[in-house]
Amino acid sequence: MKSKQIDIYWFSGTGNTLLVAEALKETFEKNGKEIKLFKIENSAPLKIDKTHVIGIGFPVAMQSTYPFVWKFIKELPKTDKTDIFMFDTLAGFSGGIVGPAKKVLKKKGYNCIGAAEFIMPNNLFSIPSDIKSSFKREKALKAVRVYAEKLCRDKAQWRRIPILSYLMYLPSSWSLPWKMFGKWIKINHKKCNGCALCVKLCPVNNIELKANVAVKHAKCEVCMRCVSFCPSNAIYFKKEGKRKYRAVKAENLL
Image 1: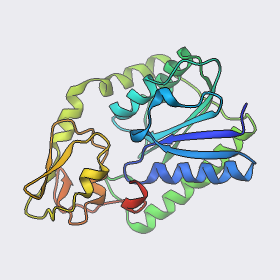
Image 2: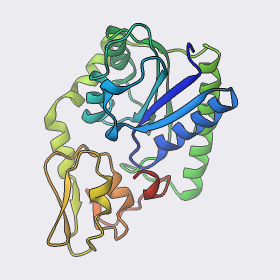
Image 3: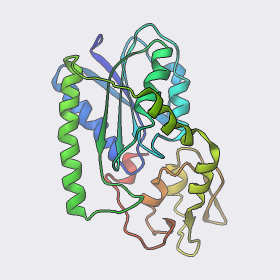
Image 4: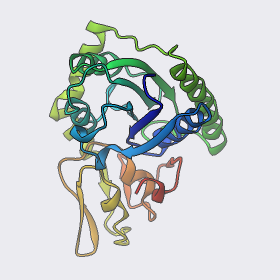
């Protein structure tokens, strides 16, 4: 790493990616680095400090990541060899983010020093028990600390699979799949208590209160924050009453 100052830009749906960002911060600080964490949804990409090492972290979605995260990456300023690394959290496999992200960033002049993916519990498909979730998180966080040490020693890698990665990225770049999956997130207005937590949590401002109940609009990117943290279980994905997973408290994301 060329600088001891590291700025990590993160987005987290259930809290998994935030835990990774915090574990990276802890390990970097033990290695004498100075770390700041920034929320992607509240950050202007053109205002990053290009003299610092930049980290970007997010969940995998649709084998890639969310459109607003891609927007942040693609709007980063051009630079002359600023060190940058990425990390993501996922349920099993991505394929459409590591290679495409490297291609975009290298074209902008960044020095891509490392990329790593960490398997964590998810809130979309089969949701594990609390014990299994805790075990999976701890296993992932051990790997995170190893990754941080490799970054500090310039031993990390950022591989790319050009053709396959780009083909897997393509579906996430189209609007139709997001609109389809977004329709599967529903609100039971009878259960909604009007607390507006979902309004505050939504990174794309897709939810508002009307007549003291939450109303969802058409630009949902299925980050699962509203599903994960609704205190009255009024918001759900496809099927109401399913078990829900979250790794942190809602206030940690606000």
